[in-house]
Image 1 (spheres, rainbow, N blue to C red):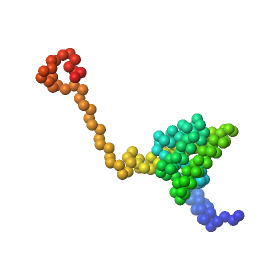
Image 2: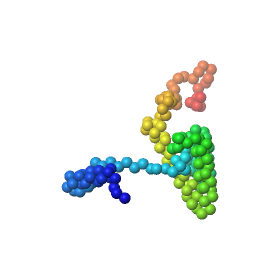
Image 3: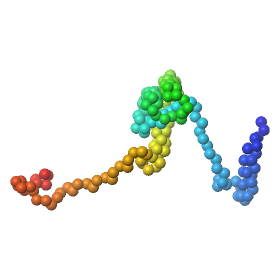
Image 4: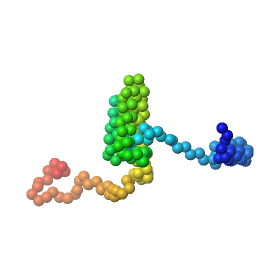
Amino acid sequence: MEPSHKDAETAAAAAAVAAADPRGASSSSGVVVQVREKKGPLRAAIPYMPFPVAVICLFLNTFVPGLGTFVSAFAVLCGARTDLPDRHVCCVFWLNVAAALIQVLTAIVMVGWIMSIFWGMDMVILAISQGESVDGGTGLVPGLPRPSPPRPPAPLHTNTPPPVGHSASIFSFLF
């Protein structure tokens, strides 16, 4: 198989950078490499859920293989986003049910149990990444009003005299 024109350009650019640098090729040579993970349909069907729900699914997947994945399938029906935007919601739901079934059936030989735990970890990772992308690092959800600042605490004791009709006692500070 012959190298493509693009590969030849990349190799020529790397050679030019290495020749210009007397120390040889270094990590700071200016070449930027972007790596993008390619997900299969089952893995891309994992829904982006709120963090507490994802942690519950991880917990369920840890102790009952496939149960958290099965619960996450219903999150898709409730509107959770996935990495399969071009597929219908029912198709993504059945992909999650199939993943749960695979986890249950292969749990006997430990493969399904391990897969189930990794699936739950992926749910938590997606929930964390969704939280970072939603609030933009500010901790706020776009579209919702800013929370009001906290109120100062009420004073514990005031120097006001007791109301008329009440006698001052040693327990007056309680009332």
